[in-house]
Image (tube, rainbow, N blue to C red; front, side, top):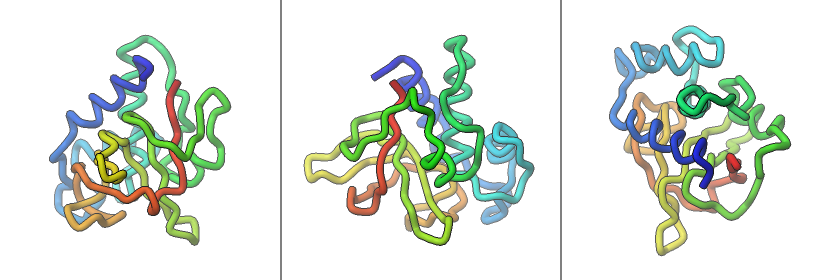
Length: 155
């Protein structure tokens, strides 16, 4: 795993438990920081902004630049992926997973662990314990690979 990838995952995990204030508002100090990193104000879905913010913060600490597209759009990130990044169907720790619900809606987060049964432990923003793509917090989830469109790997 690259230093940027490793630190991005560590930063994302440091946000575990962050919640919207008030719940279900797409707002609150941390959420608004994630959204601001992609040029948006409060009120927007923020799972991709959370991933972008995590990578941007890691890049800043490592004195480099983020290879991600500056967007809150999950599918835009997937469709316009930087050629310096690897797109794969075989996940490893630190990969950014992409889910496609159709009609332009998606969800994303980081792979924390590939479990022995093949499922994935993830850390995600804008989710909840029920697994919503429009939740209210940063938390760990378990995802089935069949739910995932693909993975973006920071090299």
